[in-house]
Length: 299
Image 1 (cartoon, rainbow, N blue to C red):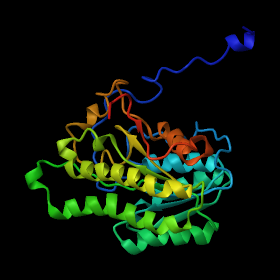
Image 2: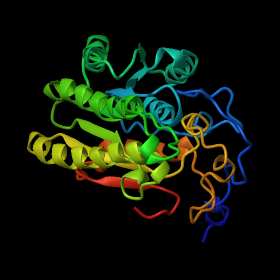
Image 3: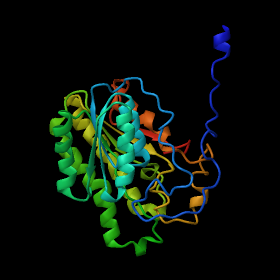
Image 4: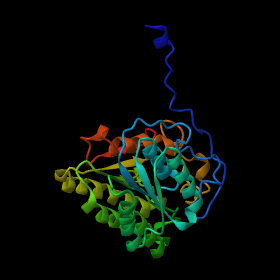
């Protein structure tokens, strides 16, 4: 072996490299923002290196202002895609920061503020993206809402409604608006969850929507496959995003993610490559799949 080969960087132990101890007690109101989080999440701002896998493409990411959506937006931009992100108006600060990273990568950013529970907004973001970029090649249906439930019997109907409209209705409305504009080679990616397969009773309504998203992904993949459009899901495990301190489970937050085989929560940056794979030609024969990124937790 050559000296250069001997000096190759050693593989990083997946148990380390990111925050692996208890999380400090903290709580936020929904929808949650990046700024107050301790420690700050890693979205790949300083680490993700693109390889031109999405050059010439345009992407729409719902919930793209922070967390997983932000990491995906940064990765897509560094892979060569223009990126539109939708987000709640209260998340403007995070959205502006994400847009700055997209532009630093030399790509165009489009900010779309509104509430996904509105059918008009969830449909209109597709038209706005097409008007800005002239095309739409990748749709990432990522926006989500969850909240800790004390018990099933105390679950308020208005909260159940909010979870379903955010996680399912908005997904359906955006996908339905996008499909007529997608060409062969396009990709739809949903953000499902380990909760779809391993539901926690405290997240029963959230888990129900994630199970439905898996069914949606698999059924739509069968319909759109003959048209050359791939549909897949990423199923994250415990990932450190603003949604976590805003979920209102103070007793569980310190140990968040430490029950995984890798003994820590994941960071948004660690999911970006999964979305890039499913959006790019590298994943050309992957459709109807659910890709777990769970730190070893089984689906």
